[in-house]
Image (cartoon, rainbow, N blue to C red):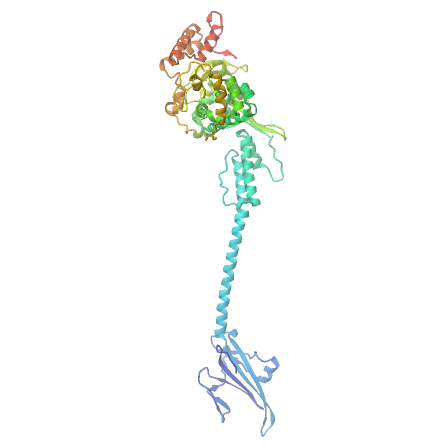
Length: 606
């Protein structure tokens, strides 16, 4: 038998078929070499198989069924299976030989079969090891490949889609909230990246275009609209309570004629300063109307359907914590705006040489000035327009009253007016810094008082010092230059200064407002400097006495107090006159004998 070095013959079987019997012999499982015994006709050290069926296995390998039957001659001959060996570990080798035998009884051919069982366990074990390692290699390869492919899928497809869904959910829940997710880890140039950024831009555009008034409309449409349905931006409106602030740029008609196309840039710079402060003070910009801006601070719904603004504002202590100081924040925002407008004057008034020359020739020493009004009331919030153009806004008399207050600042010669309804919502610390100017009745029959927070428009809010000015027409960035020139040089300065100012370039400022606290009225430098003209106890005592006499109908005493206040005001402020005093004196003196009309109830019609 030709065997490899890894194969070993474990069993050897001889099958001897004679005329009258079939004899099968096996070797012992040992290293002893068998030898032929001629007397017994068998190999020494060999024995016949046992009848233990558990160790026997039919002879199959190397023989057909017919040959096996012939070998066994009907006998139930079997071959043993070696202990601890599987069928796959064994190879059967059968050698068949024939010879002619003549005996006394017969002459026939003798068929001999030599069967060898070869042990292949070492080979099969090695093969099994290779198969084991191959299986693990394939598993590791598949797992690694899956992870690599899935990582790319997650990064390029799944994560961007999840960010899209999250961003849409954020917009539907709070359209006014900026995106909280960072657009990091996205592959530039991929369609999914483009879609994520597009959704984010659309959200920003909706937030800017619709404003706070449209936030509810956007949220409802994104949250309630089912797939396949069209957006219904014009459907529905709701009643809300809000503080309304109205701002207007002074001398805007003249400014527009001088600046021409640059007036848009001018207005946008003013809006940049204003809107940044309003947002820091929890307000929102609603409308930009040429030279005017409508701002709002939304308030909680009125309890039990309350409709009286006076009663509503006085109950502000019952508001949620985030809403309790909105009245103070609205006033604080407008006052900070005045100071920041001065500090950013160089940025706002950055015009071309031609525009600057036209502007300063018509209005020497020009600086931006604002009129401001604050009121509180209920309003209808919704969208107005058609499917071609809509505006999200508020419709209410309260909005009109805030505009009336702003326009009335020109009559009282103050930059800011507040309604009595709004004044009721202020904290005691804020109320102490304001003064009551008048009480009026609207055509609608609504009666409210007028209050102001005195503002020094000529103070230097960059260096935080008051400036003594004889006339409010002087001042500005160029007044100091003009006053220092020799006589006759003013015209030369007009030509030289404007181009120099136009050549200066100022970066867009980042407007930040210090967080509001109830102590700002006594600690904030801007708040203190704004009131420096009236920050005298005796002056304010005379005013309080005069306004009380005016409301009560004792006009002769009111006139005396107003004249006294005007004198003291001029002494403290280098001859300047107080606008509200002049207005009330002129109003009272317009009546016969300078006395209150019959039936005077403490207010007059406007």
